[in-house]
Length: 418
Image 1: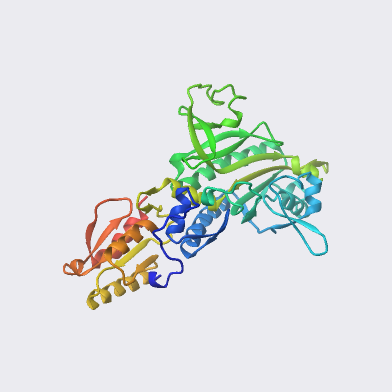
Image 2: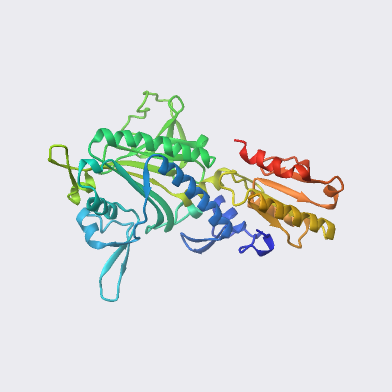
């Protein structure tokens, strides 16, 4: 992609009404545009990052047997009345001209349970799990912290269906491992903790995945022995000690919830009379689990954690481009060589953002640091005197010179490295 043609521009100004790092850098870098409080447009750079995060999530959900579907955001009032959740405060509602009301989905138990009931009747149909990556709507009173907490946002929600609690528990443990694989792949595993949280209507406890950041809204207490945490909302119930080992020496930290999993058990299957016939023909109520993760919130969390005073430092796995090619000067020979390199990288299927703009070196380098692509390649008169290019990794302070003929191999080796 030639940067001169890229829709969305970098800006020096920090948005006055945005105090969070993720909002400031993502807006300044041309990744997102604020439409209104809690609602953002994802520009081409931002959409590329979001899509990569979604694909990582998709791969790990497929790996544990999840089947992807797409359910409607517009939902029937009648189904929400069945579960008694129509008047919950986060529900956004719309009314048509003929006075019929609908809900805008902030979660999908009321859709997926009747859906599953249509197709799964025998014990032979179980277990199975369905997931989607879809836009959710929530009536947040105080939308804040950029894309960490919005009124419209992307969400992966997976629902599992089982004939017994043992099978539910087994899948539940699989999902924990899958979540940490995702956090590892997007570069935040070391800051993320499995966290005991309130179970609500479903069970005594649920589990959250809390990522340490000063922009977080939750307080957690970490057990360094077990590497798990407890949400402040239930710490008193556990008598201020770790539920795994009893350790009372817990570290208090601020964090953001980047995922959650619940054992719904029979809460929704009973409401919709969702039963299956067992081997003996006896009807039993289906067991369910729910597993949520927000790709857009993950994107914001990555920026909150991986940045410096110059801008974002994207992990290779989710960066909008793998390489930022920067052309310096106004020499036609240099320009021709930069174009040649750009074309060769495209031919090799290497994702490259090519800064071909008529700007100074200072402007180009500042924009490059702000956007945060992992590898910057500079082509100039100076580098071409030795038939080479200058390479700088975004998370390093120094640079190195690489022969132009060795560039593709260097990039591939860098991208393949852990």
